[in-house]
Image 1 (tube, rainbow, N blue to C red):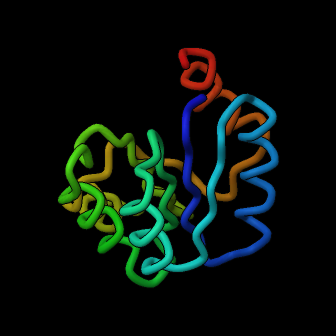
Image 2 (spheres, rainbow, N blue to C red; image 1 turned 90 degrees about the vertical axis):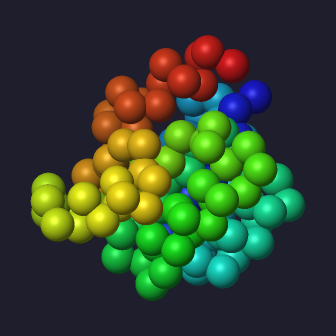
Image 3 (cartoon, one colour; image 1 turned 45 degrees about the horizontal axis):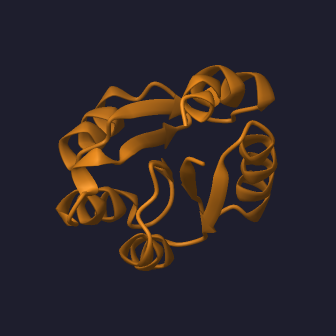
Length: 120
């Protein structure tokens, strides 16, 4: 089973994302802060990581994961509210693999991650 972590300061976003992603076959962990996300990744690195750009320390999470052994293999999605080129470039420089627009819903998460869950 593919492991996914959602790092977002919003309890509701994490809860909704976890429910949807669990239903399509992911084992989902949650982190409400950058420190919590980094600590959890040190314990068990996920296959996929969704990091909310608005969370304090979001870029630190990406940088820290990329610096971990096997960290280069994690598919990191930087979650932005709008297609803000400056913010997206900062995420890319930190090591984000891809972007996800927020707010996301079942249709978006299923279309983006459905194939990955099935590939496990």
